[in-house]
Image 1: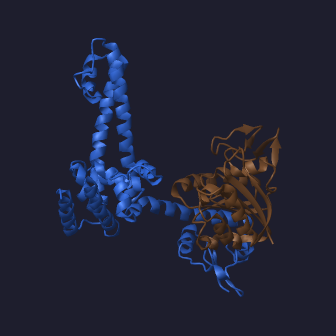
Image 2: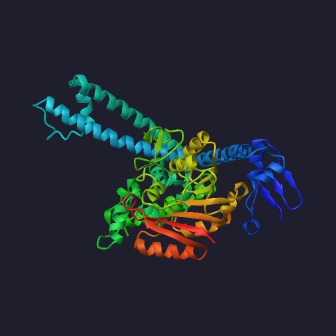
Image 3: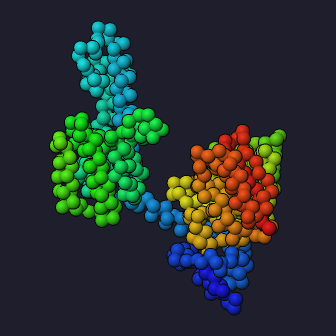
Length: 286
Length: 199
């Protein structure tokens, strides 16, 4: 029975070595297909008798080099999808939002302590607006922190544009329906484009509202109407009584859009046009 | 196995994952490694330089590095790219680790690289853990051993861990002799070690 191993082909009569160049061996090994019914594990001494190596140490070393080369190639391949970096970009963006909000709240609290006459009541000042006030009024550590927050906010804005642009490129159809930013968040929650493309519309509809969904499934509470897609104006601007329907229709079209993005990878104008019309139609009160 | 003042250690280059050292030996922490927990609880078999190991679910190479300290050659199989990057770094510094990026569900993917081994050690978070082990028995020498770290929660979170364990045990007994079964409490919850020997 012919056995095809990483170092060569072996059968009862002879052994054909595939050389000793690690790169060539790796390339050849990647093409091997093994049928497990007739498979027998390697006896390293065969590789020695075959003339590939002289000692066991050499055998293991060469094998390690070949396997490491193959593994590096596979790792590179798995990171090569354009969606992989986008995933990290969205997560960084959301993390920046969290951090900036926390820091702003803290700075506002600090500023109030240093300025006894100041109150946020009746002035409806969000912490974000107070930042300018603080940068003008405060000194020392607080002013430094405020400057730093301002810089972070700038970073966030630039990153947001980058995310949006990358999403338009990676998810052209989904982005056309729901905007690059929300599209990127859906991708991040799904864990990748291939995962998103395999989701049914009903799952996409409630992505991001897992807590409400599971509390519903466990019994009692009403089901969530929308998760991340609520962030799109068409959903949150819809009158309350049709919001559920808009979310459902939108999610169904997003599921199709995600598949187009994954399998075709380019915008499909007529699909986008029809889908937009259908979603707009769902928002008209019945 | 090497014990210093009742602490399990291994001999090798340190600093793999920030592990403590004791008299120049690397401390093998039962709270971090399920295999260490098995030894601390009195189970497992002696790891010696003469044996070759197939390690399924090598992850970041933490436990792999200790196994490699004790044994001759370790074939370390891992599927996910992120941990594989760490494993490659561990394998770069330990000359007896063969890092293989492949799916333990698909032994045909790495069969062209495999020798017969004396021990298969499996620690994978998959629902079909027993099935994976059985598929890999083709690499086990007659008289060799299998240590299966059964993650009962990965099989089915809703079911009683004890029930999952007895089912797994029955599944393995069709092909192997089960030598020892024990829970890894208090070190790891809902994890059991099943030690088998081939017939």
